Length: 395
Image: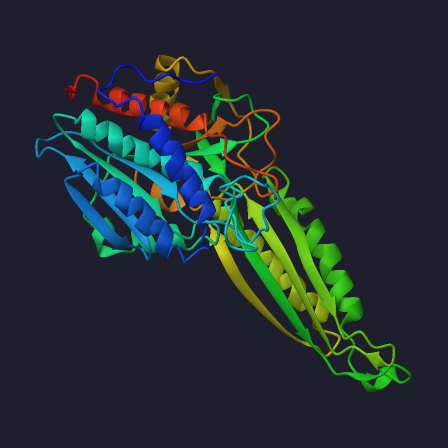
């Protein structure tokens, strides 16, 4: 089901221009924190839409544009991610990524095209009151971009009444809006554990300090940690993603090991407890073995929590657009740094079905469906109408 834009004073080629923009962004994919050309492509498009103010850069290579009239009214912020992934694309489209091992396999190219399209709509149909902010955010995949944005002095002056974001979702009927109140995306963090003992000859392992058995015990107990009584009625999980022990030598008993795991749960307060318990578990596993250990944390994501009022706005907008709404029972297991925004202002993230046959996110065969641009643009437009209803008429 696809939303069809009403007569909004747009040229016939408008949607085609957004498709071309999406494909240009796809071809020029850049990794988190490196979105220099991506920002330039967006900026060139946005300038044609004549926003009242452009903020560039913000939070690194981020970009913001503001549409306002100067009259009092609600302030809305719509966020789109800019970064691609370190994945080699397997598609053979003429617009396939031009950079080896880097590609838009999560659909951020489509999300940017939708937000840029909203700039075009606002240029042709400006609100008479209030303010609308379009925020293009870098480094979502590493969890660093949103934090950099909200800590940027330029952001502190924006003060939105609501923040919104969408994410396409393969496997769901195309155009279906999937949403829930409360926790929407899980908190997560990457844990790196390094064990240091003493290398020895394989014929005399007693001369060394081998981390093999403690490593195996850590892997087993970390994986079982969410079943502990403290987490019995709370969603949490630990996934071991990497393990390395010693060297590829039959003559050497190892002296070093490294384990990496991802911890995730649906509440930030639970994450604090999960991290603490994981640290104690590692220390206990090595304490009698004479090993040194070091724990570091990276790619930390807060839980993204949807405000109930913002969810009602999205649902009403979807209904107005003639789109189906599906209410999710559980938060999405994958993480999203949009939680940095919802922790400060009321807001909501929702999923937009990309079709049952669309390849999964982060797979090398994935490609954002171009016909979803108009649907995403339409629901954003209806969200604006819902918030501004009785408060802000449009020309």
